[in-house]
Each structure stands twice: as C-alpha cells, then as structure tokens.
Image 1 (tube, rainbow over the protein chains, first blue to last red):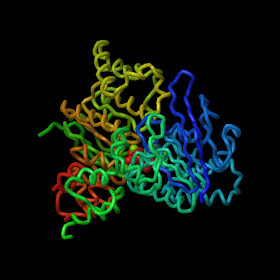
Image 2 (spheres, rainbow over the protein chains, first blue to last red; image 1 turned 30 degrees about the vertical axis):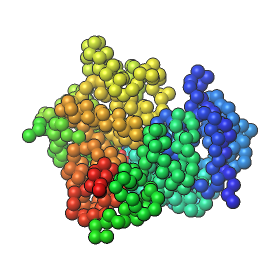
Image 3 (cartoon, helix red, strand yellow; image 1 turned 30 degrees about the horizontal axis):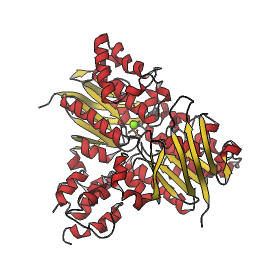
Image 4 (spheres, each protein chain N blue to C red; image 1 turned 180 degrees about the vertical axis):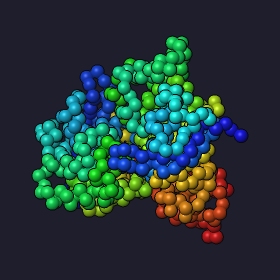
Length: 284
Length: 271
Ligand SMILES: Nc1ncnc2c1ncn2[C@@H]1O[C@H](COP(=O)(O)OP(=O)(O)OP(=O)(O)O)[C@@H](O)[C@H]1O
Ligand SMILES: [Mg+2]
C-alpha cells in the first residue's frame, strides 16, 4: 500500500488581505507513485495550488492561508516550507523568467548546487538531463537567447537533473512542438514507472488522458473531481459545466452514441478508441 | 486574386550571438484575408520570421515587403501599426502599470484621437472580457490573463495584419473560444491573421492555410486538409495531427480527405 506524499487539509489561500480567495478549503491526498493530471480552466487556481504544495505560497511569497499542506509527513505550517525541495522539484509556468546563469550548462548545474553533489555526478546529471530534453547541442548557449520552446525544455531539464521524488510540471509543454511534448510526457511516464510521483498541469487533455492515472479537476478554487481518469472523463456534463473538454475520441464516442454503440466503455485514448470503433473500420 | 500583404524574398537571418543561422532563404507570400498558421519544431525560425514583419528584426540578407513596399527604410512604428505583433512571452510585451494604460498606450503612440482610443478600448475590453481587471497592475495578473491582455492591447490599434506568436499556449477552452472570436472578427473585416502554434487541434480547425517550417526554411505550404492528409509525411515532419484525425486514419482508407474536428468525424460516421 503506497503512502501519502502530499496531503492538503482544508487548505485555503488568498494573495492579499483584500483579494478574493483563490483556493477554497481544499482537501486531497496524493500517494507516492501516483501520476496526477490537474486540469481546469484559467484562473481555476492550478498554479496557485502548485506553489502552495511546495510552500512558496505562503511561506516565501506571502499571502493569507488556512488549513495545512503536508509533504512527506511533515506539515509545512511547522517547517515553513523548509526542506520541501529535497522532496519535490517544480517547473513553474513562467520558468524562463527565472534563469540566472549565462550558459545552458550552468543553468542546469545551478539547480543542483544546493544539494552538494560532487562535480562528476553533477556533470553526468547535466549530460543526462540535456540529452533527455534534447538540448544537448545548446549547452554552451545563453538561456536568454533560446527560442521559447528551447527555454521550456531547459526548465524541465533543470528539474530532471535533480531527480526528485516528486515532479510537478505547471504547463511545461505549452510551447513545445508535438515531438518535444510527446518526449516530455514519455519522460515523466518513465519517472512514474521508476516509482516517482508526477503531478502535471496541462491543457492537453489527450496527453493527460494517455499518461496520468488520476485526474483532478479544479474550478474556481475548488476540487470538482479527483478520481481515476476514466471516471473523470466519462462525466461529460460536469466537465463541460466547468469549461473542460474531453479527449476528442471520448467526445466523438459520446456524440455518436445514439447511432453507434462501441465495444466497452467510452474510450479516452486513441488506443481505446481504435478498439471501441473497431466495427466501423473499413473492411472490418 | 487577393492583395499581397507580406512577401519575403530569400530572407536570411543570422543572430550574431552564437552565430545562429535561424532563417536560410525564406520565400513566403501572405495574402489579404488569410488565416495562416505557421507550424514547425522548436527553434525552426517561426518567431524569427514574423519579427521581420514589424521590423523588430532586420534581414541579414534578402528582402521583406509589406503591402508591396520594401521595408528596408521603414521604421518599427510604421510597420507595427499595420502589422500588430503579439509576443510569445507576454512578460516581454507588457510595461505599463495598469491594464487600461497598457491598452491605451499604443493608440496614443500611433496618434489616435482620444475619442477613437476610448471607443476602440471599450470594444476590446468588452470582447476580451477585461472589465473587472481594468485597474489592476498587469504584472499581478496570471500568465494567461497577461496573454489575453497582450492580444487586446494590439487589437486596440486595429492593425490590418495580426500576428500571434503561440497564442494558444496555456489557454483554456474559454480562452480559445475568445481567440477564435478574434480571428473571426479579423477575418470578417477582411484582415489577415498569422498564428504561430504547436496546437494542431487549433490549427486544423481555425486556419485557411498552414505553413510548415523546418530548420529555417519553408518545408510545406498547403491547406490544413492537405497538410493533415498524408500520415507518412506527417510522421516524417514530426507533426502530430489531432487525435480525431488519427482515429479516422485508423478507420479509413488513407486517400480520403482527412477529418479535422470532432464534428466532422461525427458527421462522417453518423447512422
Ligand atoms: N536572440 C537570439 N540570439 C541568438 N540566437 C537566437 C536568438 N533568438 C533565437 N535564436 C535561435 O534562432 C533559432 C530560431 O529561433 P526562433 O525563436 O525563431 O524559433 P521558433 O521556431 O520560434 O521556436 P519555438 O517554437 O521554440 O518558439 C533557434 O536556434 C534559436 O535558438
Ligand atoms: Mg517562437
């Protein structure tokens, strides 16, 4: 039985005293080894939630909160967020605005500096992360002179080099080309198979449906659903009410359900859809 | 035949930093009223080329024509008033201290009358749903709202060509619908839109023409239906078509016209 790695208990948050409440009394548990996709429309509070999980909100950037976040058994209210980075690596949505080094190589190494690795291990990790994120050719370039997608790859590489137990990616594929995006999803799936916990905020519903096991739907600061992905994506009405769309194949299956009943449950991945719609295949 | 709005002739761009040859002789013509999507891998030169259309970058070699005129002696102001460019990264575009100021600044810069400025702003505020944040400091906004604001601040001066660099990145369904309304409005006014995007669902459903770039050159240039037709070629170019297009590939003979949206799929397989 896997143990909880991230727990939120009646957690609420707002940025300032006179601003609206952004997270409202949120309670959920993520177990070690889970792959959770977080979806929901803009302003649902996804980025705020990610930053709260790592304690940046409120312990570094301020704000008012209530309730607690527990990471790896320790309440952040007690640790004030200290030590979270030993457990969780996070790629922020605007990660490119946080680069500080003059070369891509140093930028990746910089993330590891606080961890006291020896030189050789660091070099190896840089090489590994840069290769996995397909920016090896760019190691000598300045982070500021990269294209948007190249910067996003770098941001992911910085976290990958750390190999933390939990990886949080906040829309880290939004500027990637399709291959680069697939690559990141493959990469985190690999981490997931290695037993790491993955949390991904992404608008690419199809990719989330492919890779995650659980999906959390956030709307207006509240958790609408948090369940196994098929359960979440079978609830078209509830999702649409919260401006979340379904994977295209699920949408198609539901829209066609009057005239066509396929094999098994509503499909949410291409693979499932090929089985479900199998009877319609030319020559079948 | 529609009027030509942008034409490049053997456009080459080399960034001095790192001596990067980002464009290697691009010939591209864009016509009035088109909604052109530029797709292609990270680093293939998409941002680099469109930044030549408003003068932010200048050719290392070759020429750029705007409405038939050589742009070599045109200023960024002259070019960007007709060719409004929305940055890939909103943090690079925003510099005012309130949303309203951000919206008005360009119109003022381009010498719009106060009345015109107010009227245009009001329209855009309504369309982009910015009323509630009009007095906010732009830097306190979340990433997506910043993105919407940057689009709005360009729409205010009513450019004839709207260039959107990765507008869909991070946009939810509501944002995408809003964006689609912007495209429709431009199109209905006979204006031209250029969108750079990695979001193939969006590209498939919303463009009249797709230009695919690879390594600083144009690799393909066709309608979305043609671009997403040939599975082999898509694989080769590392383009992932919409999921529904892939499902249709699986179910049908490849020679048929490709399906570009869920509604097309449903229509095809109904009854
Ligand atoms: N200021 C700069 N200095 C040096 N090289 C640059 C600069 N800006 C971009 N480049 C390089 O030029 C090439 C083309 O970059 P460009 O930004 O045009 O790509 P893009 O197609 O827009 O990519 P993306 O999809 O990642 O946004 C890349 O190799 C990039 O690293
Ligand atoms: Mg770009």
